[in-house]
Amino acid sequence: MAESLKIGAETFPAAAVLPLLVQHQMLPQLRREVIIDRALADIDCSDEEKVQAYQAFCDRNQITDDERKQAWLAYHAMAPEQLDTLALRELKLQKFKTQTWEGQVSSDFLEHKQRFDRLIYSLIRTQDVGLAQELFFRIQDDPDCFSQLAQTYSEGVEAERGGLLGPVTLDVPHPNLAKLLSISQPGQLHPPVRIGDWVVIVRLEKFLPAQLDDNIRQRLLEMRFQDWLKAELQNNPIQLT
Image (cartoon, rainbow, N blue to C red; front, side, top):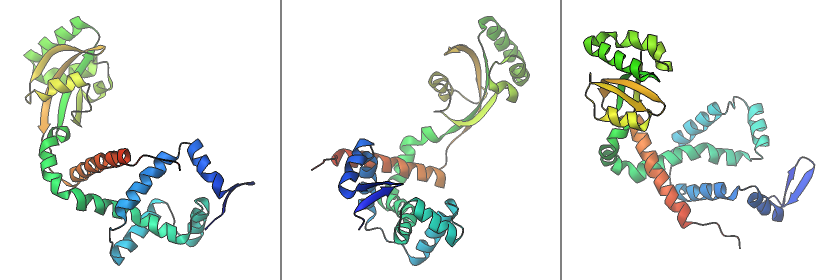
């Protein structure tokens, strides 16, 4: 067990390290990691999983040979057995999430499905109210001209794509625009409406309902984990004694 910490030419006795952690506001992060370590203590991994986790960690950190491994260990002031533990931690964390909340994923998906649904829409934005009205009537008469008019008149980056945006989830557009799109049917054109500093014409092109795939499953597990972690942080305050 180290009795002091040396950084460059300066040495700090062990008793001085805690005040340094406090001074530099590092205790909240330490508390978070301690709570997670406590939760992972009983998570088991097979020998094959350990090998795969170690190799994945080395790949992510570009530890390609023993020389780079020694350099990495020296930079982090870490012993080889601590590296082994660290390399396995991400896998154990994923297993903890799955074992704890996998049973809630399906119901969570139904509850939060709307935030994962995606849509494609066309947009023209301008600060000229009169122009917006004129463009709206032209699109009403000829729906196929939306793309050309967007390229010519829209004042945002969407002009480069003929006004076409997406696929995106509803948390990406401006909240007022998202609300409008959420009640739209594919092909529905809305009259000019003011959104922030712009007057916009919008048409929903396609609605892409979310499917419970692995990506969304992981996001739902992460949501559960973050809620759990927030509660644990509240229930485990930092106390200096």
